[in-house]
Amino acid sequence: MMRFAEPRTSITVIRETRVMRRTIRAARLTAFAVAAAATLAACGSVASREAGESEIKIGLITKTETNPYFVAMRQGAQAMATARSATLMPAAGRYTGDNATQVAAIENMVKAGVKGILITPNDATAIVPSIKKARDAGVLVIALDTPTKPQNATDALFGTDNFKAGQLIGLYAKAMMGDRPAKIVTLDAAPVSSVSRLRHAGFLKGFGIAEGSPSIVCSKYSYGDRTLSRIMMRDCLREAPDLNVVYTVNDPTAFGAHAALKARGREKSVVVVSVDGGCVGVQAVEVGQIAATAQQYPLKMAEMGVQAVVEYAETGVKASGFTDTGVKLITNKPVPGIESKNTFFGRQFCWD
Image (cartoon, rainbow, N blue to C red; front, side, top):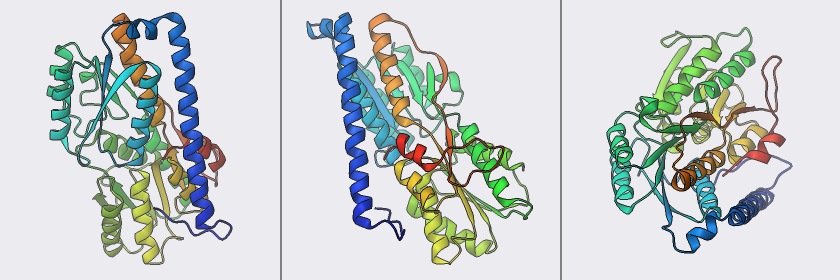
């Protein structure tokens, strides 16, 4: 568990707060499920399936099953599936970048008779042939958060504008640096990750530099993993001890980077920015471990995805195109000209 050293907050209170947040979130999901089920029962769709129609099976394939982001996504999908009297079949890659397990999951789900598959691809290109087979079999396939390459390999995409998310934290980091020369570290996810590429490109655009700029003093792939990120950050500190900006692809990466910086006594002299905005990430912004994070909304993505599959099963209408589920810059040190929200807002909409 991530621990935060803040004089006014004890570890016990932090734990109690996190338990309370989970309880509130679970209550919200349950209340939403009950309300949705009641509404649908009134118009007959739930009642008709209970009367003997085939159940609606929905597949959900996430990159991993341990990252809090995908745990939240699975919880949101399950709550909505329950509300719509559908059956959720979850699966996940064994690690970030694991395409083979996702391919096997698609094949198993098609054989099981799913009406739709929601997927966060580990390899945006390699997964495309398997998605095509599923679509050819009449399965609706929707990407959540992570677009395939090409994007139209799936019927639809529900997710964050990841380029914009990166651009927001790039703009913010640039503003925080002012006139000081920047010496930037970039810690990205897997090379095959389309989300990682989009966030990285957005950050560079926001900061006003191009790939290969001399301002970038160290670039590593951390695969979104906290432990590996700490190792990569430690390597960057050896390669460029005077670094002063760290871009991280997600909050777990930021935690690993912060741990390495703290071990060298550099945590207060480096601007760390990230993307995710989970509850622990928002708390890290609150206590100053991360300067800013671009918050995204995996629960919303999952809920919308489940609803789209149910609608397809009931009406034959397919979701299509890109639906932006939103992104907000979260920081307690706003800068003029960049729209942001504080951590109070972030806590209302975070997940863990």
